[in-house]
Image 1: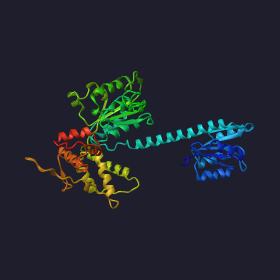
Image 2 (image 1 turned 30 degrees about the vertical axis):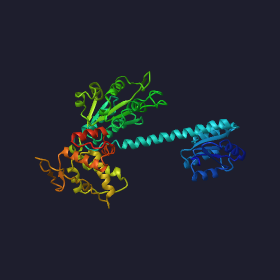
Image 3 (image 1 turned 180 degrees about the horizontal axis):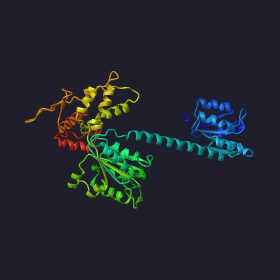
Image 4 (image 1 turned 180 degrees about the vertical axis):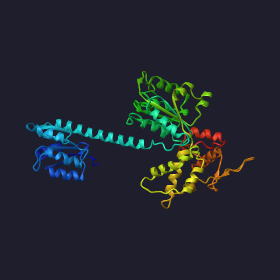
Length: 460
């Protein structure tokens, strides 16, 4: 396979060019040689060079004068300027015009190798940094909180306070209310958004591996541990670790988590000593942790340690005033290059719907409506026509929505039950896939099946 990186040599000394080409023949980059400034510019017009060796004296120009035009065509290239010792001032001029490094002739090939390797490493690190900045920018865009109703304005103020502290934070709210968005907002509005943001769904981590995944392990800690493994806490060192579904973390690991929060010291599984770690923990749950504490399923001391600052996100049905703004934002996020129309009648239908899946369900419905549209207008209400469950003895008929007579308003529990039944049917009662589609942990799904008296069926 042809190497993707290139070293361009611009030097009129054909013997030197041949020596460099032979010396770097088996490297992970391609070496290209040209004998004039014009040839070098032409090559850079059609190709990309990561590193350029540029001689001071060329037949058609001075090498120092060529730095700016070369960088205009290959902006990320690292230019190594080659000069004779009596003309060191030319090297200074080249550095001022953007050259990365310079070497004096005559030079040793090993000296050249060190300079070229250093230039390639610098180019790679800069690309990694640019990708990190792009990732940070994209993630910060998705940490925007939309709306002011239903207490969300107060939440936004708490987010600003939370962003300025390293204290643990607990975010509560129903599934799909945007707890991960709030966690990202806290991180990316902090003093240094370039630090790591690592998220972990405690309910999705296998119980036999959760300790290793969170805290890491030493070599030989257990069968199959052939190397040292960094856990999510270490990956988030200096930044934020978002622990979603914190209520699902096993009781025997809660003490270890409490120890890290209290002392800032991490000990890997199988390790004998601990190491200092600086991680801000943001935890989230849709579980009633106070009830879990009463039932001895969650440590009381850990609950109070996590909830130094607590943010509760209201469900979407309590902030219907935000649905229009949310819908416009989500439509733009889903289809940024398209001008889409959401009719007022459709908006009224969205506002009348109880949204058991909250903002996540709203985004899912809008995305499906955009995919299924035939023109510039979308009709998400056509995807919101649930059938009422069979009425039991003494059950009352569902209320009709005044603005949309064909859309019944069901009790919230019935709506959630209906939604789960439809999801199970869509995935042939595969609990794992159904939980993933609903955006909840498998254990949460099983708990809700029991809550709604639904038979678990075959465990898949």
